[in-house]
Length: 271
Image (cartoon, rainbow, N blue to C red):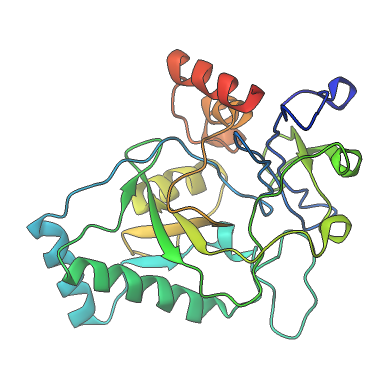
């Protein structure tokens, strides 16, 4: 995305779309963009690369069956994503935007996962690295708004920007967003939840770099939840690729930059 002083000229014929990450420090709000519509993402969303369909194997079915038999879960809510949930009895504040019980959310996602595996399907779709997976779940959170809104000549003046770090230990990067209050009533309810997962090994690696601990042995941890209206991944924005390149000690993942993929991302987010 371009800096604020270089706002694109938008017209009815051709809209330039922007990735707008929400500021955890101020407006727990909407963010981002995609060709044809501007995507408003919730705070701390981690956009990832293209998705392809995986094939289920006997080992996956066995692991799922074993998990159900022992009462353990394959997927748990990671603290990084848990802060996006509104605490019971409190008004949404900071990065919190999901008004749903955390334990119940975790249970719903596991139920969907287990049902898909039992039917012979692998619900985990590949992400931008081997340790990242997506599971696309029909939205079950009442009133949870979609993460997209088209940028128009009428609403572009509402865009805000700031250097934002998702946690105190991350490096801040320039982000843009629509304040929730400014676009209230303009965003439809989401139809899909893109639940983004990291492997336990990767979570432990990143936690160790940040001086934190992982208190779960579940194979997968939910690191982000993106409400949207499509059963596929929203592309990663270039600044996210750059942050990942910096390494886990700066809030990235340590994945090296693919020049061709970066060029594609720039082309995508610039049109």
